[in-house]
Image (cartoon, rainbow, N blue to C red):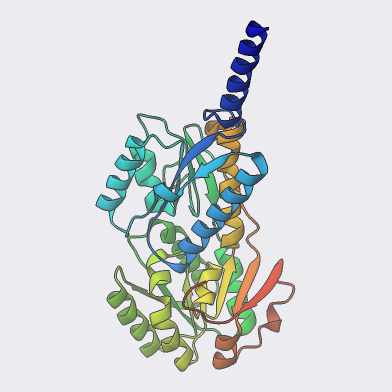
Length: 338
């Protein structure tokens, strides 16, 4: 009798420990440490981060595991030295996966994790191959995969011409130090050259420089302004959109977040959906053991237009002309945060 009681007690302890145990493999009670690193504090990247965290919480509840990101979420402040220190700290904490948001953050995290081979699932990288992060979109080939927010520059210029067929001069506003912007700017130049549209380039690497560049484009009396998914311009959007609005110049951009911060039009992927997909990929690696080297980079539907209705009215554009030119047309108004 005494032996049976002892065995029952031992089994009870073992079952309790198993239910509460931590470890790999997705067992109930498992805790995964998730590092999240956004390149800079701006509306676009913050939107992605919030979506990642919300999806990790939802998946954790669904699967009975915990994705602990609260202690491992950082802002790189657009500073390579800060990003390098963050990477060192995350690796020292032995996080199970790192989710860098935007190309510069992804490049630093991947370089730092090369020796440890800590899995990387990036988000909002426009050109993963061109940035040297993956060998191929379908076969990344290393400890890294993620989601891309690549845009269709030609489609955006199609919107510009649909709204104003007489467009003769376009301003190109971007940060030349942002690698993610350069490919889209080259595509924009090629489109302008092929369609006899003049263009003026203005760049800035700081808020003050971006405001000066915006003033220069207004003075040049351009018909429209194009900006790709550029984090530096995104950070400054609230400070420049009124300059364009007052001059009657529509600002076409490569992300919906720009429109939420005052730009006339954002065209590309939904950053909420991008963040959600990124989190799902991280969960697949952690819980299901997916191999990042053979997990294809995910590119979302790029045909979503976000129109700021207040700005549209101010610049006098009937955006109904865009119907049929996108998979979905959404509306927003200006907000400082969302």
